[in-house]
Length: 224
Ligand code: ADP
Ligand code: ADP
Image 1 (spheres, rainbow, N blue to C red):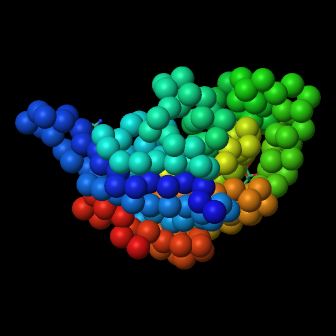
Image 2: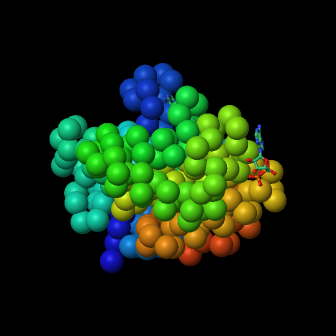
Image 3: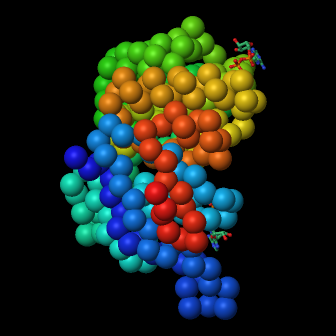
């Protein structure tokens, strides 16, 4: 049962210009429902490009893509945006929380934007915060929280609207090794409890070993 599949995806920047960079040369990859896949790549290999294409933030030049059975290549711009907001959660190395809002509000806001009633949005936000162990920090603004706490809250925000697919780019990359280990554990608990499918880019082989499967991106192709 496949959640995400990319087949023979190609992507170049500055196409047809002297500065053309071919990044993906026929990348093929799939993530099963409920599976957590580690994406390991040397710097500059095109990991961010691949995640952006998989997350409907960027388009491939050619190839096929399906998300939970839906052919993504055929979607209009509007349908792509809708699918991205509804079905995909993103986590980056830096938390990108809104500084003027509390932890709780940062998780409520994307739900309000998605039409969820305030009361339900707050209940879900509190549940998510509890699941990653930061329930007691709900009313603090990001600046008053540790790096580990900020990142746990970013995980909750990514899951706020109940996506089908989670895409993460070095989710614990800016934390010290001990904190990174704990925070990654919290992320895995959250992913497992919600049955989410995930593609998580990391340079950390210990973290990669805790996922279900590892794929490597090299020379524009995915190697198992
Ligand atoms: P990674 O995340 O693996 O470090 P990226 O996907 O960010 O790799 O980038 C892959 C290659 O594409 C790099 O050589 C990078 O310089 C180039 N690149 C990325 N984005 C752009 C862009 N918008 N315009 C031109 N080149 C880009
Ligand atoms: P973590 O394990 O998440 O890295 P730390 O050891 O950095 O946590 O922080 C321990 C405690 O100190 C946490 O409860 C955190 O909220 C609090 N704390 C960390 N930095 C700040 C800060 N700048 N202002 C207020 N409280 C902070």
